[in-house]
Length: 486
Picture 1: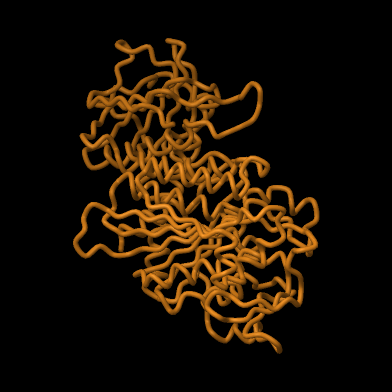
Picture 2: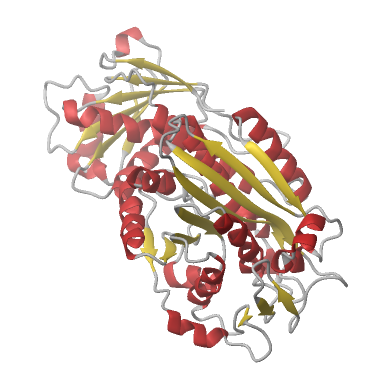
């Protein structure tokens, strides 16, 4: 639940409020102008002088101090010359200096010229909303509670910052689902949650059950799902239609939803299996995007396809050297059972492509090699259209969720040639598996314009950009920015 926003076009007045936690956002300045009656200006100057820090330095390293009123105040500058990611990071650091005390309310005091105020307010509110809401925990006494109110001083928006609120809600949905423990978020309970969400949001809901998928010939998905104790795996299809019905583009979102990944018969070692309840993050991101697009009524027909299963070890589990037949008729030789993500996505992409959307965008925590290539500060993208690569990178720069593009040339297919099937699932060597995985997935899209995001930035220690939790919800903000370009 997001904090209630209370707005005022007037500047912050410490004499008319009992604010306990104040975030002051300024443009980059060399000295404080007299035209700004900034909360705690004297305290800030004394603090900077004592630490021998230039005022402009707080665009990189925000500072905080207690005021004479007893309030804790944090000051930060937004440097227009820096990237959106760097600006978001600075505001997030300043915000966390206040949220560390677990306040109920937060006051945002925005300063700048007319062209700066809206932009500063957007960053400040998005950051406050995504960090001010506490993620689910199962402690008897949680350390964090959510903000109840955010007070914005210095700028007022008649639309109540609907876009920023939608982005925050989408991001929080993605993160909130991803952090749930695997005994709580099973394929069955996940589908139940999605169905309830669909009812609340007015989305069409359809679930292709395990038995249905077997009858349809979705052998790639079924091979992974057959190792689970119960046949509760499913491909869930959601549909949202914007209110502008004239010539709406059809967009397909696809997400990997492996609720727990043991690696199957190629069992992961403990240090690599810990955290595998987050392997459903791609599906959570797709849901977050759909929620944000619904909240702002984006003018698209959006189909959301979620491949929900678990990858377990059992007498029925698929194994190396199996040959299975995917929904599009291609035969696949199994090389490694821990490459299950591309298997469930193969049949899900086939279903999405059958509806002939203008574009398919899929999200998955797919390969360790992408994390090796990029670390966890960027996610990697692939596309079969050069113009979409450019749009993807541009959306990353504008949203603060940075992406790096990778090649997807056809000659990589040489590595996936099989003697007994149409294609190998992967190779045993993982050096450039992220590229081979993209080449594998490209076989199931029927040449539809397509972007594949390998979510190496789904989890980053101490947060990334605007988001302060390890689980980042990366992809929601990026996708909405991309859809704006479309």
